[in-house]
Image 1 (cartoon, rainbow, N blue to C red):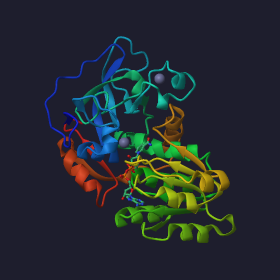
Image 2: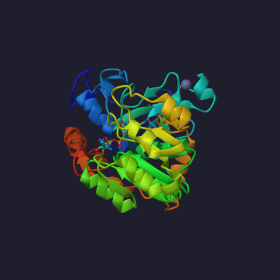
Image 3: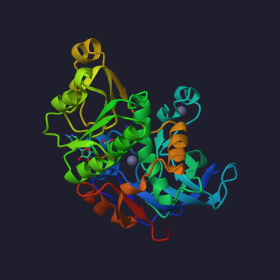
Image 4: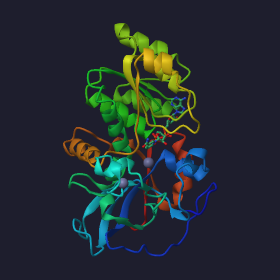
Length: 343
Ligand SMILES: NC(=O)c1ccc[n+]([C@@H]2O[C@H](COP(=O)([O-])OP(=O)(O)OC[C@H]3O[C@@H](n4cnc5c(N)ncnc54)[C@H](O)[C@@H]3O)[C@@H](O)[C@H]2O)c1
Ligand SMILES: [Zn+2]
Ligand SMILES: [Zn+2]
């Protein structure tokens, strides 16, 4: 599935067998999953354009696969090994990379945007994008570790304020839903979830959240639920919907934290004096997953049976059905897997 240029759409194309470079592995894709970002790329929204793609590019950045060939400089992987893929390719030598922030590399390349991605039968990727999967984690859940890892990173960025805390999650797509799940797993006492899609509200409620539509008075709900605390300890913005940030600044308590994950198309206004200075709210953003501690924590939780992600999978479709998958995302769906025929 190839994005040919900076315009809406995607093409099914026969492409050359990927060339395996010296430090690359050639993978057979066993399962790939479709993300809200893929919808943005198909529709070619301003936030999609802001990623600065290299064209033409094979789309897709969430997947697990099996190594079928290794370049001569690959040291840690062999044919037959099963891996999940990180989507942020770090250079390893810039300042962020050298100081432990490789997810935010100064020369970052993103799978399916700047290097050919996973909506294909096979892909050649640098070895350093691969995370070997433990035996107990299959390809379908393996493909979900990338998006679910964003949720872990967001909880991490709140300095795990979810533990023993009250939480607000704005937007219950897959990332927001896993934030609900992780918050409760780590000991949140109350999780309020805001989501317009009734199907996704039901999923959030089934996890244990109080799920409401965006036309609810969210600030009042947060204050009522938290009593003398005066608001939630942490609010996660996972919708990218315009205009929701001021509501979250109101709904958190004094000295609370707002973590943004969604990428809104337009800059948002923040009342620095009222919210950041006088109310003391900390605002933090998230980009990708921490390399590799997010992966270590997520796979440990899944392997130990403490975190189930398989319930997120609502559809399995063939690779070429990407446009249908993107249509389905707006309805009764959470994660949609694309399974290449050869898998
Ligand atoms: N920061 C990062 O590294 C990173 C990584 C992955 C995804 N993202 C972004 O995070 C967001 C969530 O990702 P996703 O895959 O779950 O996407 P998604 O599009 O499936 O989820 C967004 C959800 O927000 C809901 N929503 C729409 N308007 C709303 C409103 N006014 N209030 C509350 N909810 C509303 C939608 O119905 C949808 O369920 C997207 O914007 C995505 O681009 C960021
Ligand atoms: Zn994604
Ligand atoms: Zn770097």
